[in-house]
Amino acid sequence: MKLNTIQANSGSRKDRRRVGCGIGSGHGKTAGRGHKGQKSRSGGKVMRGFEGGQMPLIRRLPKRGFTPLARKTYQLVNLEQLINFEANTVVDAAVLYAAGFIRNAVDPIKLLARGELSVNLQVHVAASSQSAVKKIEAAGGSVTLAEA
Image (cartoon, rainbow, N blue to C red; front, side):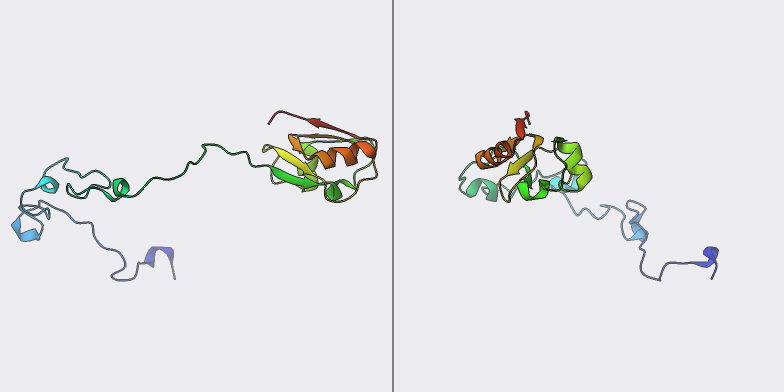
């Protein structure tokens, strides 16, 4: 097989419809638009959801509830993940990302209290549970909450 001999399967590719090319083409005269009406005119488009004057579905359905525009989603890190860091290490987003504990170093991080901690660490996160802060401070470390 050579690249210059490759062809598409017959019938897999259709020629585009060439409209307005005379009555013998099959798409002449009205060019497949039918007779009269809004959709036969140039620029004659119907707006999204329009149902011919009937009350549209989006307006017939009841509106309930409220969806806030932005909700903070945190990347979660537990204390049990921090046990392998050496003492006096500054644990921030870059360190956690390099260790593979978070997806990216941009989104805010929340520290949770699952597990125990025996080494003192300086942890910089966007949010933390109160029990996680107590456990880190009991081990001699500190938690700094940054603005997210």
